[in-house]
Image (cartoon, rainbow, N blue to C red):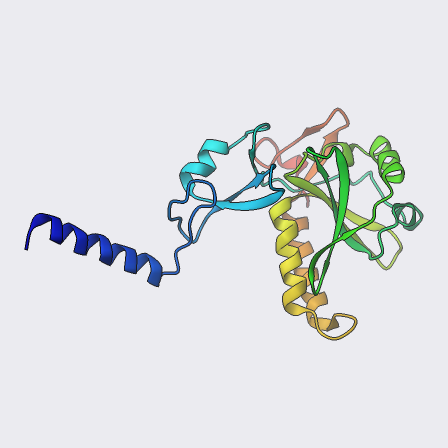
Length: 225
């Protein structure tokens, strides 16, 4: 057997092994990636892309260009309380939604998780801009890659988090998977509680109204108890 034939057999075996492992391709460079991967936002296509390690490093910290790396921070402002009256002015039909700013269109867009996936909701731009003026937390949401995730409480107020956009779509997947019947059922509520408890545990607190954060690395006083 020639060296070339041997190399072909090796390449074919490697390719079959990748397919057997259900390997998927990086959505930016098309190289095979591992099961563990990162995300970037493709601003031109308005979509979330799964990327390999090298691409993740290449786009880490980017703020401009077609591809922007999705950050990992989760943040809250304990001094900010979104009321039911404020929520009604936003005109979002359900009490669980996330709002992000699309830089290409220069507008805020609202989505809510549903059994059919992420459903866009009409958002009162004037009411949202008024909320932006009143809230440091809202002003700190990064275009395209973060959202303000909001969930209503029985008290009539809302829990609000700055959340990476990939976590928002993870939440959408949870709702799609566990929703039962007309109201969703108890299972989806348990999964939602688990998701938000995890968000709460990893969140950082806004401590400087000039748009700064105290991270877990920089100082534990900025972390949620």
